[in-house]
Length: 62
Image 1 (tube, rainbow, N blue to C red):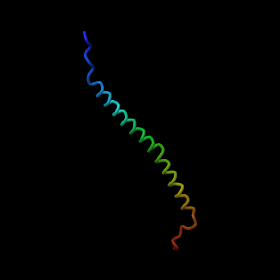
Image 2 (image 1 turned 90 degrees about the vertical axis):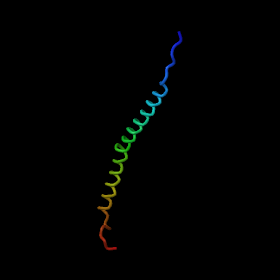
Image 3 (image 1 turned 60 degrees about the vertical axis):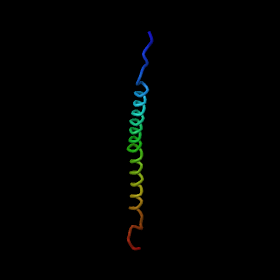
Image 4 (image 1 turned 120 degrees about the vertical axis):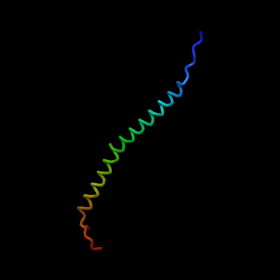
């Protein structure tokens, strides 16, 4: 008695792999963007804000 071939398994696996890749890629991108990139931009902007506030050339005599 031969065993029937398993059909559709490759397509299901491919859909699972693509879905997982997109989901994990998106989650990783959000983690990088909001966990590292945005805080570093805020830190840099605050540094330059303090630097400009402390600089004596804040007058508009040019």
